[in-house]
Image (cartoon, rainbow, N blue to C red):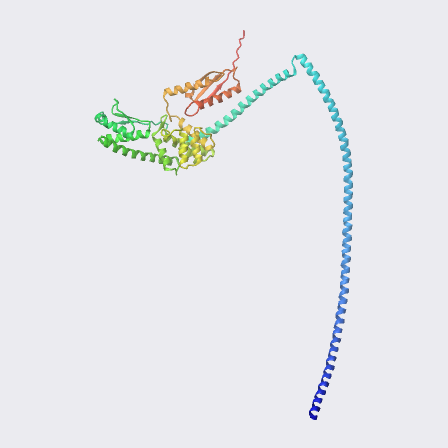
Length: 510
């Protein structure tokens, strides 16, 4: 027991000694570390102090530079301010001198105005004195003298205005005539057409007079059947080897002509056969009408028209106006309108179509009430034609205001086609009546002495009374007469109105 206790005590004493030795060793190591740390700290402190001094030196140098730069800029600005102050002072001196000059000038102007007022007052007094003296000498008041002067001045101005009007009118007319001649000459050179007017033939030749009896039939049954089927009157008279057809509808007349021709060639003429032949003739004429419309459209260069438009236009093949075939007239108008439009820069396609279809309403005007221009426009609008083409159709007789160049071109082309030599024919009676009507219209105006229709009715020459009509009134009279002719007459082409005013002075030497 004692031995164990002694061993334990020995162990404890050993541990205590070891602990003491370890503590002493650790304390020595810590002291060494502290000494090294202090040395490092002193080194860092020394370096920081050195850098601080370096930074301070650098900052002082920069501060000195900034101060020197600021002083330089301040000096420059002071110099600039001094220079501006000198300029301002100089300008103020100049302004002061100018103000002094303006004041002197205003004073001088005021003095001159006062002098002018005095002069005006003196002139007014002198004018009143002179006017009173003139009135006393002339025996006229100022108002009467003014009226006389104004009248003389008005007459002088009117004469000058008449002269200028004549000069300008002559210049415009000369230029317009030259340009129109060039355009029409070019158009006429490019278009050539027959000058022989066509005539619708309503006479059917027969081989012998014996055929007339067969056409009439027993108790007239054949002729009644033919008239009933075609709506055409058959005139069988003493004319040898011919039967005349009469009807206001040219298509029905053509159907009757074709049917009668077939019956004459066939020889079998009885009511049943007549009905069969008339039906075939209707089909042939309908096909011919359609073909004629299509050929006219192709010839005029107007493709794409509605079939109903072509069929209606084909009916014009059997209609004439003053002996002129209306389908040929339509194609001719289309050609002329296209060429004129090309010459003046208008729409050629619109002008061609408007010229081809301008008389479309004539194919139906005997069936529907209204003018052919408006009927044609309504039909064209119904089948969705270009509105500009519709306007050309409706305006070609000026029934509505003309609103496009193409419409004017169509009007001109229509007039050219209708008035060219040989295009139309008139009876002598109608021709004489037109000349008499021309002279009657002219003689109905005040101041007209006499008038003469010349140039085959294409010019009316009016002799006026010179003491009642002056030069300006002559111009107005020519316009009024031409307007009256346009409103009250129908005529092909155009009519020239010439007013002649002549003053004669005669004296005898004794």
